[in-house]
Length: 301
Image 1 (tube, rainbow, N blue to C red):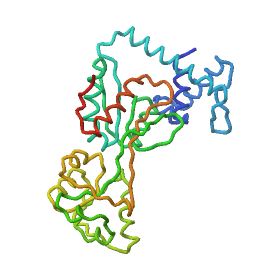
Image 2: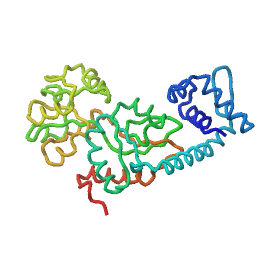
Image 3: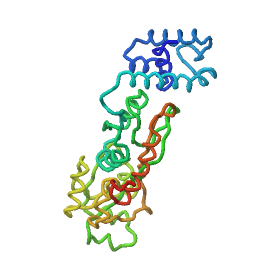
Image 4: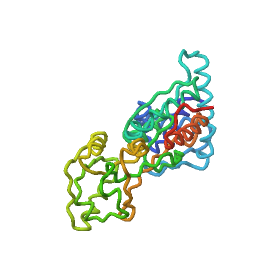
């Protein structure tokens, strides 16, 4: 049984496409197809049900997946041992842009202290790129927005709700409720980013037939935050970016849940099968508690 044929099979399973598997393996589609057919001949079963150009895993194919993964994993471990790699075992982690900027500087030192034997490689990328790299096994763990795919397992990791914040002493700080009209009358620093459903903010004013007083429209999160801190306006910011400022009282969160909410949770994601870093995964979840409580990321027993 050829290891290349097994890998071709698993790439097709995870990417759900011979075309995508061929691209990931830098092979032609006929080559990938031939490798799978050879594997089926070796096993004496049909791993896929074929109808025209579409492929669907057969029951035998589904049952064979954990065995294929075990063979590949054992081969890779043996290959590493024989090569006597100079570098320690490496875990590759990816995160979307906001998670990269505000959470990973806490999480990576936390993990390194807990697992000094590991080397950590980190990649920052948009959510779509992260999912693609994860399915192609170029990442071990990804931190990203919610995504549905049968080949992955996910855990809710961080709350990244978009919040209305003002500077200390702003009149909104002392009001129990805020109306849409009052909100529209205030000078606003508006951070606009494709990662968030900002259309809902616009829609809030459109429904009320009110034009908001947007004085500054910026596409850089830290610029928007700095302008609010310097009392140039109020604004909506994702909660990951303002944890420290809220804890220190430099910014004040205003409750507008009676008007609308924008929830943007961050999930920790890995492949459903063949995941080799369960202890590190658990420690990532622990690092979230440290981060959200504002504690030291180095407080590991």
